[in-house]
Image 1 (tube, rainbow, N blue to C red):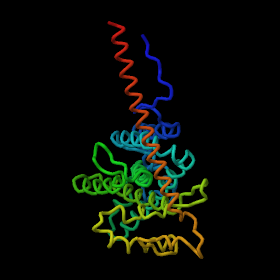
Image 2: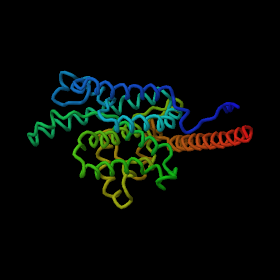
Image 3: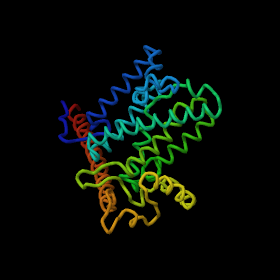
Image 4: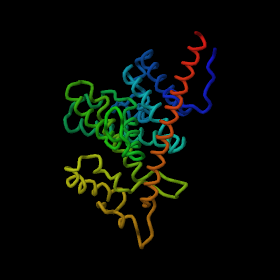
Length: 308
């Protein structure tokens, strides 16, 4: 006896968006390509000494996974996190976020490698191939921090707002015991910071005519424990002035106004609504998955009874 499909149900391994599936195919295809044709790494991965003639590797490096472990982690992370973020941001904004974070992360890694070469005169910084989706995955965690910061993760017993900080901390800690840290650590650090800059200052909200998220809950110092924030805030204000020409303080509501008129992206109410939408979307998805699992178990029990 066949079990009828549950209309509108969304299980754990269903509900992936078409865009995420397409990007997953790109990641898997890129991995297969460099395994079948190892020389392709020289043209697709970020190799600072070859970036000047082959500038396209600033774009392609983020989609080339050189290890099986990397392609599995990247594909799973893309599908599951994308299932949460894309419906909230929209497909166009989601793709735009990936493109900008990937390109600027690769650019920062390139500049850092060139700087390290001139400082140390070590040629390894010029010829070491760097690639992988890690920077964008780190950016996804920043997006989760923005949308559902207070959502507690049942497995880790940790609030979602600490996910980006935890990822960076674990990556740095692991780098002390592994030799391949250069392939992922710079992209994770720069991916986290670039994605925060994008969401904080550049992301446009056409429906509300806003840009960025100026809320105190999304300040740069919130990536650090309370004890370090008095030290981090003055440093963060320097970069804030470079980006916006204004100083940033804990009570920054006045900084986002000019002559009593709010500047673009200065509505904290909109930021709060965005987080509420994220939390509501997550709750609805989890509820749908629990309902689908319950119905599946019920149908399975019914089939077993009928077969007896």
